[in-house]
Structure formats: C-alpha cells, structure tokens
Image (cartoon, rainbow, N blue to C red; front, side, top):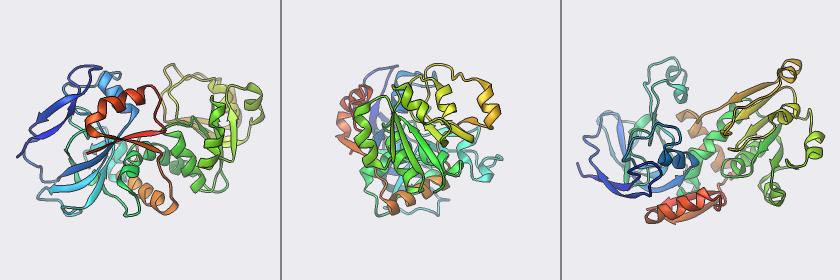
Length: 335
C-alpha cells in the first residue's frame, strides 16, 4: 500500500512539517478517503499543543474532512469508490455497547477520535470505519460542508437533544466558529434566538445570521433585562463568565448547555437550579445518524459556515490566524 503524505506535529506546540506514514492494509470495514478539504477546529490546536495530555507525536491533525472515497474494505456495502463523503471528530466505536446499539456511538467508551492516537485530515488521505463516513448532500459545497462535521454537529446535536422547536427561546453565548452556526440552526428550528457577546460590534452580524435579539454581555443591565426569558442557552465560548447570570436568564425547566470549555471551574448557586428545576448540561459531537440529519437540514435550509480558505501547504499560517482569532469564522484547508 502506498504511503500517505500529510503535515504532522512532531512535538507539543511544534509547527507542522511534511510527514509520510504507512497506513497498513485496509481493514474489511474501513474506507480510505482522498481528501479535498479539511477544516481547522480549535480542538486541533489543543491536540497540537497537547493541552489535554492525550497527544502522541508525530501525528497529523484534522477532523473536519471532506473528500471522495478512494477505496473500500471487503465488508463495506454502504459506500462506493468516487462518492463524496465527510468524516468528523469520531472515526470508530465498538459497535456493541449499550450506547452504540442505541445509535449514540458518540458516547461509546471505546470511541476513537479521527486524529487522536492516529493520523487525521491535514493530509492527502485518511481512513476510518465506514459507519462514520457520511455522504455529503449535493447542495452543499465541500469547503462549506467541512466545518459542519465538527463545529456544526457540536451545536446541532444539543439543540436537537433538548427539543428546541418553534416555541423555544434560545440563547447563544459567543458569536464565533460554533456560535455563528448555532444561531443559524436555532433559527432554522423556528426558535426565538438571542445572541450574547462581549463584542458590541458583532450585533449586526448576529442579526444577519438570524438572531432576533442581541445582548452585550459586558452590560449587567442588559443581562438583568433577560432574566427568566430563555428555555435553552448554549455556551460556545472558551472563557470564564458569571454563569449564575445565565442561570438567572433561564425560564423554569430551562437548561444551560456547555459545548465550549471555560478554563476555570463552572460555579453556580444551587438555589436557582432547585427553585426553577433548571439544569446545566454538556454535549459532545453527534452520532453518525445525527450528522447525516444535520447535513440534510443544512442543505435544505441554507445553513452555511462562514469560511476563509487556505491551501493545505499553508496550514501553519492558517493555524496562527485561528490562534489569534483573526478568522471569520472557520478556516478550511484545500488540497
């Protein structure tokens, strides 16, 4: 089998350098994808820097992958060579545990990440279990589909899991790579959407994305005015906030859901939770079925990531720009 060429980190925080590896024999349930596009996600940055203590070097990052099927294993019946497909954060699961058998493979204790302890999508090709390789609807352009495979599903899954619908009042904290997609999906579900941001300059953009209301979260008066008005608030940011204020912004039975990871412990008083049956939750990526559903919804309703494209050879430049929050809102590498 020919070697696969990509761009790898050889040590924590190192710049990416050309790297070849032998993928071995294609497994019976595996698919090899010839990559055309790969999004840059903040998780890639954490893995390159080993912020989570799970990175093994050298490794090729990347898990928002779009390309065409180049080869299929002997047991694969669901996909054909030449078909356009996507691959997200997860590339395999055990297929047998209680979570996998319920169609919740994203919760499998034996879940395998696409670029955790293996080589991902900043490359010419990548492999994964066929169950996690999803056909891309014709209406979606590849470069816009790529960020949906992690960024999109990360916000879509909790909106669906928590039953957001036309009667819902939804808040989105942070208008960035995740938040700009969360606003669009919540609006697609018919919800009333409030955007929360520390940047007053983002109001116009938030409204253009579909937000009905904008709250500058640096203004305590504006935050107090929305007390008791939301059924569901999703936090997409990696920064500390006064989370108690957002709990107060929930209606009874409302939920504050984390998909971004603040650096400090999340601390709130128990009383508002008890008094209003409010809850705090978190959400990982979604199952293959949910990703397929999300792509269909995005295609039918025109949900679109705002992207900046870079050639794969300029991955290091793109990463630096993402680190400095200078990309609006997702960087995508193209082969």
